[in-house]
Amino acid sequence: MGRLFGTDGVRGLANRELTPELATKLGVSAGRVLGKIAMEKQNESERTRLRAIVANDSRVSGSFLTLAISAGLLSAGMNVNNIGVLPTPGVAYLSKRLNVDLGVMISASHNPMQDNGIKFFTADGFKLADSIEDEIEAHLEDIWERPIGRGVGRYREDYENSTELYTDYLVSSIAESRYSKPLAGLKIVVDTANGASSFVAPDALRKAGADVMVINASPDGYNINDNAGSTHPELLQSFTADSDADFGVGFDGDADRCIAVDANGEIIDGDKIIAILAREKKAAGTLKHDTAVVTVMANKGFVQYMEKIGIKTPMTQVGDRYVLEEMLRGGYNFGGEQSGHVINLDYATTGDGTLTALYIANAVAVSGKSLAELAKEIKRFPQYLINVPNVDKARTDDEVLQAEIAAAEAKMGEKGRVLLRASGTEPLVRVMVEAEDDVQAKEIAEHLAETVKQRISL
Image 1: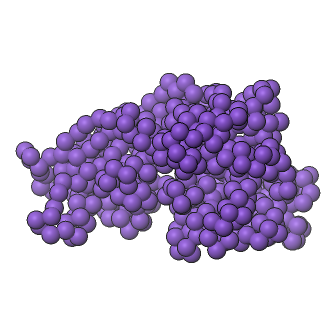
Image 2 (image 1 turned 180 degrees about the horizontal axis):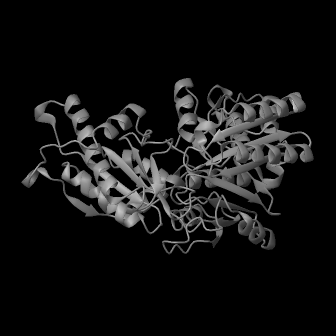
Image 3 (image 1 turned 30 degrees about the horizontal axis):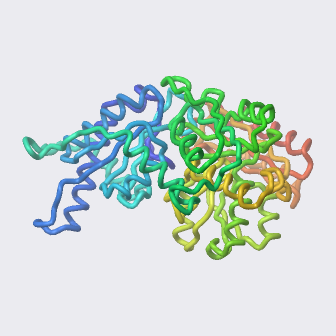
């Protein structure tokens, strides 16, 4: 059996792989492991009861998983505050703001509704270290002496105050005071993917002064990410192009991602967003070491543009946690992924879609330029990404497959590249090809995707 924790917590098909029984065990083990760590840091006289906050996105399975993991934490002696439906970065922020010992988010991010996941955050708002996740996993099946009476935790619910604390903080990052309206005069379309940002993102943008038109903001438990949001931006594109909006933004189910579209409906992906915002930070003298950390998925045209304007782009493997690790290691304060995870470490400890949207809007407002004008200098190489499902992710080192990849790379030379990687959260392999020639990139991507199917299908 492989490691339970993946690149972004524990994920699986809700009620099949990710069951209430597993969630309860995770809560118990997390409470015990963190309790042990706290005891090691405190004197006997200083010890206080540990506290956790728990939130979820809008998918229907979030209810039973929230209650199940809360039950586990409570039985381990932790107090639990259920803060309701909130974006993942909201949990990260409030873990620190509310001075709790653990933040828990129930979400499968951009995955389909039937999936779900559990993410843990430290008291500083960062995701748990691998070593702590491993310890939690190692003690899942322990038989232990449970606390009784006053030893068990207390449960309460506090939705509205938590949401307001988070949105006010986001707005304060660009507003000089609670009365200023830095985005006044902008009209923005917001696609919340019927997810956790359905009320947070529109509220934050309106508080900052923008005129907001909202689509896909009627979560019913089943429609999260359903042909909506950052992974399905077609409606956002057409709605924005057909309106008089200045631009549009779209989030995924837990709002740690943000993509944008200009007034014509053209997509401004994570690469272009990173370039625009890094350029603004460099001009303001706030981009540490003139560096933006990105992943191997970053487009070659983006990398060339960043070199041209004097911004370094060290690369990590795919996953916002790896981007963050490199940022912390190198003392950098900005980075992200092509998918729309953007980490602005001056204000957030993880990717925050609403924060990103506010900064995109602020860049438009301050510059007096349209989003299309801000993005026009960033030329992308044609890039084709094909997801190949139902394959054995562990067999991507297949000799024939690797030979085909080598042949494709030799054919393109310095004018293109191939990236083959297994998804860390879904049962599929991604084939990505970049080339200066659009037709060549498409042909090679389709050929390699077919080779993947033939060689490593389940």
